[in-house]
Length: 227
Image 1: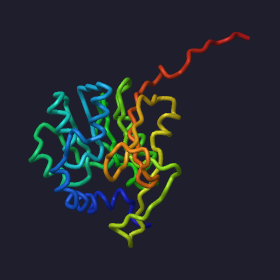
Image 2: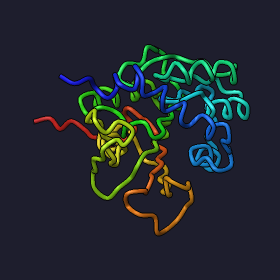
Image 3: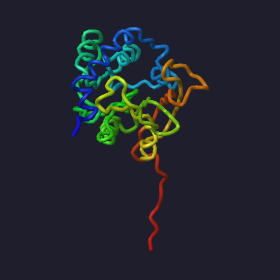
Image 4: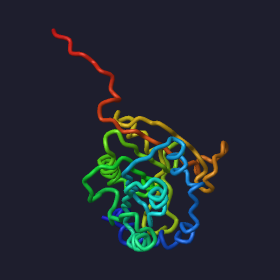
């Protein structure tokens, strides 16, 4: 069997992605970052934050500086983690994949931004389960990814001979249908420019959700009728 996409990212492609994008990450703007803008718009001020697929922790560092939250990054790339530990001492780093997060205590906010479309379909449900496990009851999940009208599979152009793909779809739907997550916000934009445009092409449309987790409060109370 060919290796899972998760394994390829852990072994090599995660580091290569970081090397290709390191310069752009250095130009990160908190004013243009849609996840940070959503948190500000909805006045979400968690004390503990986890980001899955956090790269070198650039977004978490901004959150820690602004709010004083305890921030933890889960990231498969050693190169990204090495850079992040040198740049952002306020962020704790854990090398791991989304499908196996070696943490126990849940967080008040979990961020998963443009990660799920990379994940191998064989581990997708396991990854969603791990992300859910990390969200405290009453906490929030900020989920961003491609948001096409229909699920779409696209060949991964950086590794054209290894059969890798990106899988674009509405990932929030499965969580909402579970009855455990309530959608509080959905903001769509152009992925390429991060601009909030009404005419974004379907292939480039991104969706950013804020979901609130509640194990029981989303169910209407019922009663037992004796026979």
